[in-house]
Length: 154
Image 1 (tube, helix red, strand yellow):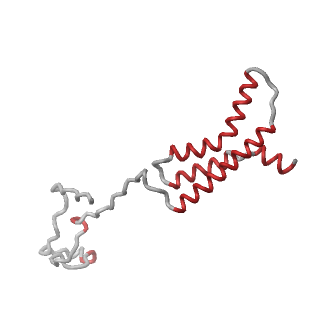
Image 2: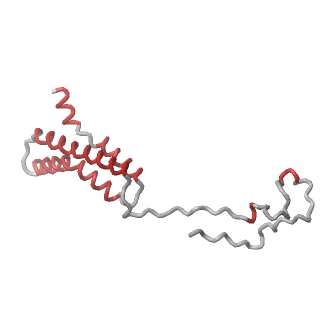
Image 3: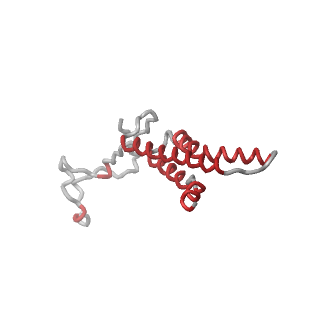
């Protein structure tokens, strides 16, 4: 549905009058004002197409779906790499230090899965570009450096 053109308030310019002689403005005219096909921009407002609202229930396109699958697989690999790295790391501690060590280990293992799920959940109403930007940021931030460094040089 197109919006109605704005109402003129009397202060707007009057319609073109072919009876008036505007010799100074001859270079700025491209036709006769009395012609039925003459269009005056001041009296024909431009209609702007309204931007449609995003439908949350609209399915992803094939490219976006493939991209989500690639990022999902990458985050799954990250989770496995953090699991392997965290299982090799042992921290000797008792009491609060031991509990905090185990909590950090679990959070490190689950961080890629949490990031992927949070990006999809919080970005439900946003554009695909925004979701992919956050997924790319997470892919850079959550790189499993302990896994890469111990497997590459050890």
